[in-house]
Amino acid sequence: MRLLVTGAGGLIGRHVVELAAKQEIAVIASARQRPPELADGIEFAAGDLSDESEAAALVRSMQPTHIIHTAWVTRPSTYWEDPVNLEWVAATRSLAQAFAEFHGQRFVQLGSCAEYDWSYGHCDEESTPTAPATLYGKSKVAAFQAVRTAGHNKFQSVEARIFMVYGPGENPERFIPTICRNHAAGTIPDLSSGTQLRDWLYVKDAARALLTLAQTGAPADVVNIGSGEAVSLGQVATILARLAGAAETGLGRRPDRPGDPHLLTASTARLRATGWRPAYDLEIGLRETLDWWRKQANRA
Image 1 (cartoon, one colour):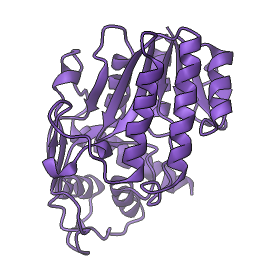
Image 2 (cartoon, helix red, strand yellow):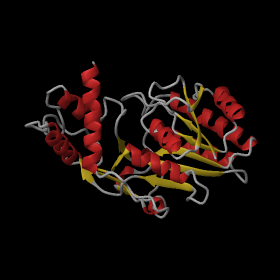
Image 3 (cartoon, helix red, strand yellow):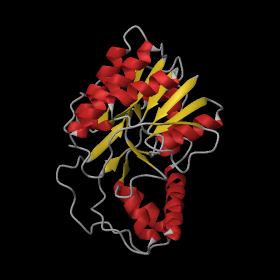
């Protein structure tokens, strides 16, 4: 295996690269610039993979046998409807077409639970409709269709639909980092009621799932990546407050977001059929995440 990991500086990509290197897989990490946390000795290829020509040129120069494509637009609060999503669709198509030219074997695209109809709550790959409500979700659907088309009779295509992955390196404006940053600063976060139920998965478990799906013989097509368990935002906030030694959680300080689904969880039968199981329970993952944010605060 010669594995290309795009988005190597992102939340998930960096952990995929680290785990692949530990497993002695020949890994090529790609991002716009070399991530500072990337270990010495890991092959790196710089490139703007939102650009069609650069995406194709990367594959032609590196000639990977496998790709885990985690790179995408993730600008806080704006990425849901950002027109640059369309550029990523075109670039992903170009990446896949070049992969087909060089006889690639397996292409794993990082998808999203945003591709599903959220009114169903519990999302199953076979029975839950693909009905994204955002440009981001629609673009992920279109990108995987392009990968699957390029791979026809040439390579295996997998879309790993990620649910609520968290851990060190996550965007600071998201739910868990916001709580961790507040506690690290000795302040109380302003949170909603916390009654919403979500499927949380520690990033190291997500990285291991992606590497599992890159292996020949793993399921192809759409595979959910999640814990398969429903845990409320309030429970997450309560655990973090206790770990931080805080007297308050901050729950109920602001209203719930309009239109936010009460339940959003994954059916994980396809993934678990590979033998994969989460190695981190929620408390251990949250403790490691809080410790990481405390270290960032101490460096500031």
